[in-house]
Length: 352
Image 1 (cartoon, one colour):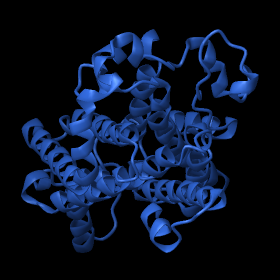
Image 2 (spheres, rainbow, N blue to C red):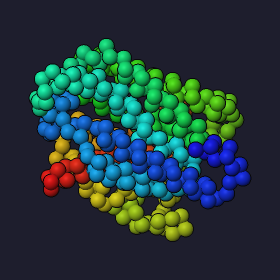
Image 3 (tube, rainbow, N blue to C red):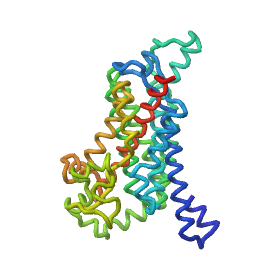
Image 4 (cartoon, one colour):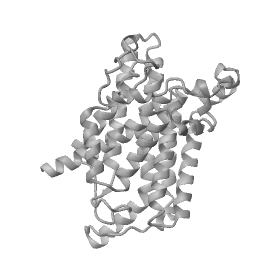
């Protein structure tokens, strides 16, 4: 969209930029809608596999609620004027749709085949041998890499790394649960191949931006940064009150009265938080635990200097050149919004 605007109207003004930010917020919400609609989870809370005890999925209303919650979360809304960040971050749910379908696709296809032969049954098992023999997961991974590469061209490498981190976190939790119902080696190979293909395609697509950036990186002030610089704009523990009261320490920089730099606390709304809690209580399975785990790890890393794991994160090339760990609430809000969608589905199904 940014390139299209430049080609069609090179002399664009502020209103055009505002329109682009609005468009990307809508794109993020639509992506979350598709992601939640793509989720499948067990109806039993003690299930570890996909579909062994009957699978259900969110309806349109639940997915719509998740999309609205994510699009208007502080992680995106606060950055409305930071177009390149919003433009890249809006691709997060779309990349995750592809990555998730790649990991889960083989077992879904096998289950669908059994349903065609035997009809709809709630106790159908899945054939985990397809984890490797069905290579269509590589197509999903490549598509996810294409979308990530397109998003990266908007020009905010930090947001791109956060999307990659979300995929890694989802994959690790998927691997943990998958290893309990199938061969761990096959699941690990599927995950590694998916990540390699996703990253490789994304790098190739974004190469026109990444290559000059890598060439200039050694000459930036950030190249001499120490850990003290990378933890600038960490999410201080007292600011956690912002998860339920975003205006407690002042909503904007001009009204901020805390002893630390003002950052977004990842406020997503009281109702989405309540619905996410309902999802965890009512549907304790691999899907909800994975989403909760993603949010939890992202939250710990967003604490920056107040959290030991963030120091480990800076050992990864690229992350040592970034600051503002609080922006990792983007991944946290992604998981919470998806959980809120599941919770809304549970609520609607109980009322209905």
